[in-house]
Length: 211
Image 1 (cartoon, one colour):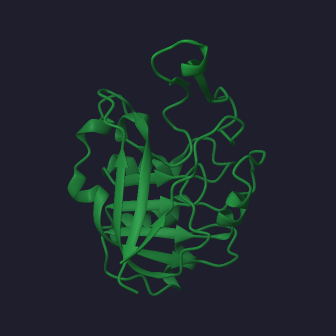
Image 2 (cartoon, rainbow, N blue to C red; image 1 turned 45 degrees about the vertical axis):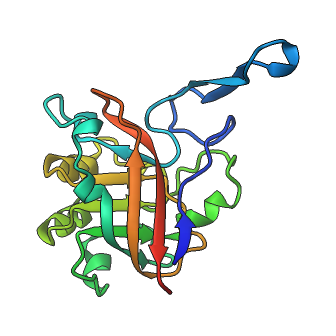
């Protein structure tokens, strides 16, 4: 089996959504200063790097992160390479031979941004339009991944794709890195931190294949 780690490394200076605090990963206990252990503190948004959005992110009565079923987060998935498209809309999706899978990960030019894990936040990233989200809901897709920090386009201020997907409890994984992953069929393992009551959580996500 070949394993691809599609998670973005968490580190100070990484891109975050505008308005979110910069993450801090700071060591506060040091063996060489007399402590028994080395220990590091973490301060960040739950929506950092590779992360999963729970329905609570958009809806007060929505499921929280620990309530999302592992049966959706783990299983057969397809990576679909969309090349140089500027947005993932109904027209783009209609022209793609989408496999009959419940889990779809979209590889776009966004993945090139992760060549530099500490790049400045990009606003020109590729993501879903509202009609693209509706298309995927109609196809009964249950998990969608995108290779930048939002499933919505940056200028979609009311977050229509989020609302359409999360209203149907479609799992949204944002911030994956598919740069070195060929299009094809995989086994996905995406495990967000089990933070009780949270609207999202960072995740370690990997793909495995026999090829």
